[in-house]
Length: 336
Image 1 (cartoon, rainbow, N blue to C red):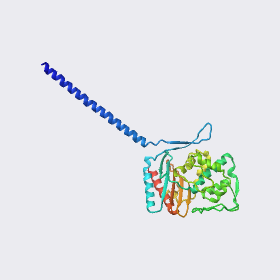
Image 2 (cartoon, rainbow, N blue to C red):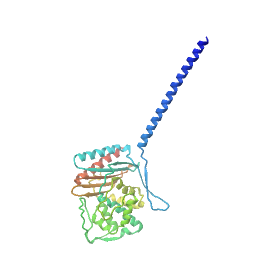
Image 3 (cartoon, helix red, strand yellow):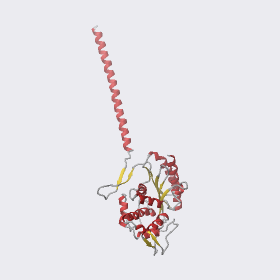
Image 4 (cartoon, rainbow, N blue to C red):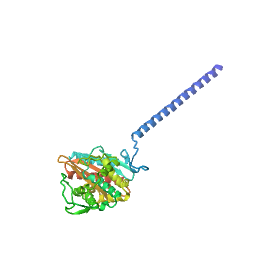
C-alpha cells in the first residue's frame, strides 16, 4: 500500500515537472520570439526613419528664424509619382531624347517630398535670375525706393549667351526703373535687362542669399555654377513660405514668376489656366544642352512645387520631357 502511494506521488511529481517544463519552454520561446520580432520591427523603423531637419537663419542676436523644414526621404504615398516620372525618364533615354534628368517635388500640404537623381549637378542658366530677384528685393527692404531708381540702357554688352527662348527685350537708349527691369528679367528672361541690373546689384548680398540658404557661394566672375534640384528648390520654397523676404515681397516675387511667358515645359503638361509661378533656365554648348524649370503649382487644397533639370542634345526634346514629367506628376497629385 505504501509503495502504491509512493508510486502515485512520484508519478504525480513527474507529471507536474513535465508540465512546468513545457510551460516554461513555451513562455521563454514566446518571449524570445516576441523580442526578436520587436527587434526586427525596430530595425525596420530605424532603416525607414525620416526625421526632418530644420534650416534656420543665422546672423541675429536673439532670434533664429526658421527658413524651412526638410524631410530626408521620399514619401511612400508619392510612389505613384516616382513610378510615373521614372517611366518618362527611362523612355526618353531609350529614345535618345534625354541623357539625364533630376526631379524634386514637395507637397506643401504635407511637407513630404520626392527626390529623383538628386545628386546630379546642373548649370541653372536663367534660374539664377530668381536669387537675383530676391537680392534686389532685399536691397529695396534696406533702402526703400530702390526699385524706383532709373537706369539707362545706353550700351550693348556683348555676351556669348545665345538664348533659345527670348520673346521681348529692353530697347537701347531707353530708361527703365529697377522694377521694370525685374519684370523683363523674370517675365521675358531678358539677359539685357539682367546685365543692366547687374550694374547696381549688391554682389556681397547676392552671395549671402546663397549661403543663408545653405548653398555654396557663387563666384561672380565665373560663368559656371553647378547645383542640384534639391538645393535650387530652396529659393522657390523660401518664397512660398515667405520665410526670407517679407510677406509682401515674397508675394510680389511669386506674382512676377506667375507671369513668366515660357510655355513649352511645365505649363504644357498642365490644364489650361492652372495657376503657376515658375522660371526656366537654359545652358550648355554644342555637345550638350541643359534645360531646367522650377514651379509652384497651386493645385486646390494640395499646392506643390517641382523642379525639373534635364540634359540632352536638343532643347525642343528636353522641353517635351519636362512637359511629360509635369503631366504625370499633376495627374498623380490629383488622384492622391
